[in-house]
Length: 150
Image (cartoon, rainbow, N blue to C red):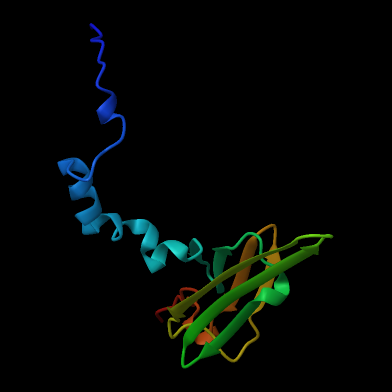
């Protein structure tokens, strides 16, 4: 590989006549990438089914227990999280105010086997919100019954 010395100082910064810069600024894909999609702002979720229940986990670090609202309505589980933080410092000749706001809402259609009348256990620990939804008794798999032939 060889290096070629260039003394073109006028080309240090892109000019408005540069075709590459024009195409970058006019390219709608810059604002349509995955970062701006609403789904990327949602917490990761795991759902596990066992014999007696469903366990749902949401990765929501930085929240506290009071930041969540969990509801069930018309067989739809709604999990909302909202966190606001404000910090203000006043010194002699300046004021600094910082704030942040995070929120999400996820809705899941529950299967008919979930007992919506029974309490849902919700635990938030180490940045993970865990929900336990019990199944209805009749939806649980019944043991095989052997009938004796006489």
